Length: 150
Image (spheres, rainbow, N blue to C red):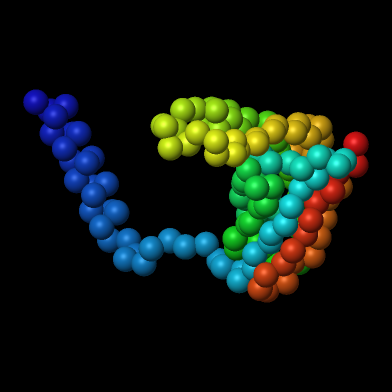
């Protein structure tokens, strides 16, 4: 019985401490900046990747879709280094390729098949610190088409 009472007391203190905190939701600073564009590895479109844009004080991440476009929200202002991680998107590619080849019913006969392709980018580009990819971000919409040489 004493063990139960001690657990109950600890739980009560935790709830009381939490309840006395601020009622404001925790939010991150918003930069008011977006970054969007396309990615190529040599002449090949990169359709699946995770993109990271970072500074010493913050970062933003997003995905490249099957259309080859990416868009990051709330990107830190100033010079950002960028990482393109294709390994992080292999699951997205597998899902898209399975969906593209799956049966859609009799109404789908003769319709164009979605062409998905996985283009692997070398691992050094996954880390913003080693990729060599940089751009400067200002408030508002920013565009940066990434071209990685083979």
